[in-house]
Length: 394
Ligand code: APR
Ligand code: ZN
Ligand code: ZN
Image (cartoon, rainbow, N blue to C red; front, side):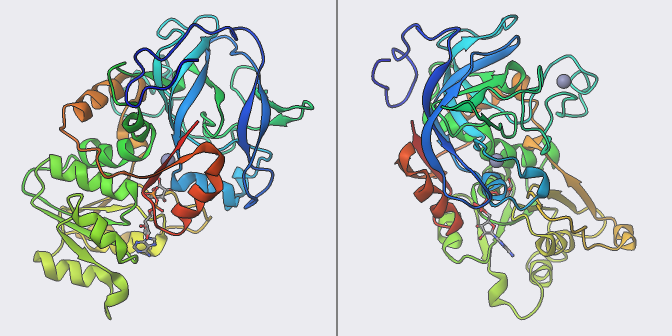
C-alpha cells in the first residue's frame, strides 16, 4: 500500500494482491469482559458470497463498545471478540455477487444494515432490516454461522454488531457497507458510521425538529452533541444541554448548546428546572446517556400536550422504564431511534454530501487521535469523559 493521504482516499489504493487469500494482520482482541485489549495477529478469511473485506483506515470508540467490553449485558458475552463499529476504510476485495462496490472504494461500515430487499427495507416507515438489524446475540456471519476471524492457532474470534472494526481487516455483509464519495474527508466520515448519524438523524428524521423549537439534550457525549448539531441546523431556537460532567458545558458551548444544566448543582429534579426555564417544558428532549433515571427526567422535561422524547442511549441492564402509563395521558410521547432512522445504504451517501457542504458541522467531534496500538488509552479517555471521539489510525 502507498502512504495514506491525510484527507481523502485519492491516490492511496494499489490493487490488492491478497484477494481470495487469508490475511494475517493486527487486531485488538478482547478475551473476556473488562479485560484490556490485546493487539495481536489474527487471520481474516476472504469474503463469502455477498460479503466484503475491507481495510480499516480509521476507527473510533463509541459508548456501545464500552458496554460490550464490560460485558454488561449477558447477551454480549461472546469472547474472544473483535469489537468496534465506527470506522472508515477501503474495500480490499468483494465476494461473489457484490456489484455495488469494488476494490479500492472508500466505505463506511454500518451496524444497522440494509439488504434492500426485505419487507422492512422496502417500507419507508423504518430503517430496520430483517436480516441485518442490530442483534446483540449475533456474533457470527449470517451466511454460514461461522466467524471470518481466528487466532493464529485457529480459534474462532467472534464478530460484533455486524461490523468489528478494531482490526486492520474485517469482513462484513455487503448490506452493512456503504460506499462514500472518494473526495470526502475520510477521518470525518468515520463519525458517520454511528455517533453523528445517530444524533443528527434523531433530530432530523425521528423528531423532525422544527425551526424555532426548544430542545433539551441529556448526555453531551458525541451522540448528544450530534443531536445539538442536528437541532441547530434545523433552526431550533433553544438548545439546553444536561450533563453531570461540568467539562461538557465548555465543550457543548462550542458546539451549539446554548444553556447548560448540571443536575448535580440542583436541589430539585432537573425537569423542574427545565420547565421553569422554558415556560412549561421543551418541545423535544433526547436521552443520550443510557440511564433510566435520566430518561424519566428527559420525558418529564417536555411540554405537556405535544412534548416528544427520543431515546438514543443504549440501556444495557434488564431494568424497565420508570414511567407510569397514566403519565402518557398528559400528551407526552416517547420514541426510540436506531442509527437516527437513516436507511444506511440508501441515505448515508446523501447525508455525507450534506456534511461536506457544511449543512452539518463535523468539526469538534474528533477530540483525540492515537495510533491503533494505543487502543487501551483511547478507551480510558472515553471512560473518563475526556474524549468525544478518539480516532485510532491503523
Ligand atoms: N445525567 C446527565 N448526563 C449523564 C449522566 C446523568 N446521570 N450520566 C452520564 N451522563 C453523560 C456523561 O457525562 C457523558 O457526557 O452522558 C454522556 C455520554 O456520553 P459518551 O459516554 O461519550 O457516550 P456516546 O458515545 O455519546 O453515546 C451516548 O448513546 O449510542 C448510545 O450507548 C451509547 O448510551 C450511549 C449514548
Ligand atoms: Zn455506536
Ligand atoms: Zn432488509
